[in-house]
Image (cartoon, rainbow, N blue to C red; front, side, top):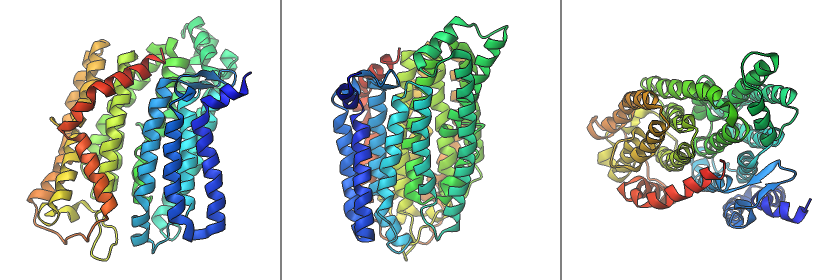
Length: 486
């Protein structure tokens, strides 16, 4: 084995791991005074990891005896993950300064880096045990991030719920992995796929074991995606965690979980397409429906965005159900546009502060925002319309891509039902716009942070009709990424 070539393919993870270790030492030595320096250095480390993707890390093939895969699909997912992680670091200092009395500690960006490293391993895993190691590295950092505000009981509760339910999901996934290994004799994706191809999933004990292994693996992955019926942790954790952490949870780990699910479905269990397609279609429709209906009665903006994330995962899964290169490309297109809309929405939530700088999370507090902060109201309206998939905003193209892929794969009924249920979800997005523009004004918000305002403006431009200019490049990139799996 050529260790130099293998290390070159894993260079992004090495950059993140070494950067996190070095910054952890700086944090231990410098204490809270080093927070700003550690945060901006962490952003630079993420940029360095992106640069490291330009070499063998995006086209080198398999490394470490086939356990790790450096291909265009992993590279595309990693770019999205690192960008979302960087924004999550940048948006944090002002929030913690106002909310917790300058209580942002330098461990926060270090935990983000470690989580991003785990997510990078997840999307490049071509072995079930490598998959599990990456997922646990991501999760362990996320548990701490959810409970980062130790004085806040809601944050502590969010971290505990996330940990308990995450441990349950990890157990389910590990049990599924053990079943697959027991009946195939391997944990490598290629060999697992060969076993599924050689054993029709009907009629005998081995077939039943393989089928149960498939079900448990997909159940564990569904938890990480927060797809129904494994969504129960999402609203409580999103509401209780600090808002920058919630924005992180709603973006980077979602991309990692979706990319991991796609790779497992296509590479490891591709021959069992008819079996896992049923699971994916159920999860997609159930997530769209529950995410739309449960959000209607929410009064807290972060809980509403939690159900919105469940709803959007359902739409992305429609592309996976197609099981074609075009379907996979539509999933990655959807996730790229989704993280821009979601991070933009959470940046607006960070601007929801009273005159004393304390966060306000009720939807009712948005009343009359169009008169007191017209620019902020316009940006939030754009994000809501885009999440609802209303043209001409870029979110419409995301939904069009997954529905088109489903129709091309012969899943016309699925596309019709998905389109019909998207109308339900549009209601609660429009309710927020109605509150901002037509209700009697509530108490005005305090002045926002300039960095947050700049990021909101960038996100609004991307999801505006100008975003359609990105379609040729985005289509070419996602198709190249998808084709690397087939």
